[in-house]
Image (spheres, rainbow, N blue to C red):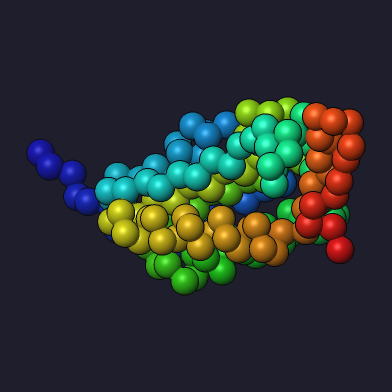
Length: 149
C-alpha cells in the first residue's frame, strides 16, 4: 500500500538560534528533512586562518542581547520570500578556533534551485543584519574588531 505524499508547507522555520555551544551541521540537515523535500542546501561558515592577507590565530564573536530575536526574524523573512521551504539557522558566539563552525544555514525545498536561492539569501541577510561582532586575534599578536559600529 502506497502512502500519500506529504503536503508541501507554505514555509516553516524549525530552528533559528544564536548559541555559545558548538554548532552541528548534521543536526541542521536533520532538522529540515521532509519526505516531500527533494533538495537540501547547507552552508557552513567556518573560521579560517587568514583575513585580508593576514594570519588569524583565533576569534571571539559577541552578540547583542536581541540577536536571537533578530535571527528568528531574518529566518522568517526568508521563509516568506521562498514558500515551501524548511529553514534552520544558527550562529555561534564566544571563543572560536580556526576550523570551528561559526554559522550554519540549512534549507530544504522540493527543488534545488529554490533551496540554493533561499540558503544564499538567508546567509547574506544573517551576515548583513545579525548584530554579532567579531574580535580577531592575529598571528602577530595584534587584534581587531570586524563589523563593530
